[in-house]
Image (cartoon, rainbow, N blue to C red):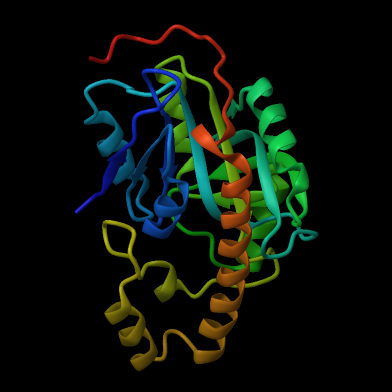
Length: 246
């Protein structure tokens, strides 16, 4: 079951919509002035979920969570504030005033903060070779499976788009295919799928340990960023007119 949590913004009629892949990301993003929507790492399911909304019901759209690193200089826990997202030969720019506001909010974060493009994909990018190719083709610093869907939704409704993504698996590290797919539709980890992958030897214990270490660093950094962003995920009220979604 897909989880959608809406929280009414205290300073306006509409919240910021936080688009995530993992349930843990959605829980971190939630708070005053925020609505969360997640689809378990499935871009098409996310599109269906967004299309099913009665209206946008938000004043801005933020893609937030962890990501794969493409820039070889980035390590787990480094933060990418997206200047835009590319996918399928198209680029959706992030709102420059929002990007600047987020960068100011995150200036005190202990992690490295990078302003750069991200790229959205339909399936997980698993190997260092595939990451290097994607980096060469797009120049993006990180890759995820939600930002391009979130950006298209924002553009369709005339809303500001932004993204904050924290590097989990760096550019030189492979992501085990079986583990990348071990998610339930609500974004919770599928423990039985992980155990099955280990039993089939399609995933190694060493690979899981490295992924757990990287994930721990990424989520710790994401949690610190979330605290700094504050109400409405730090997205300023730009005073833009919204459609009536009542």
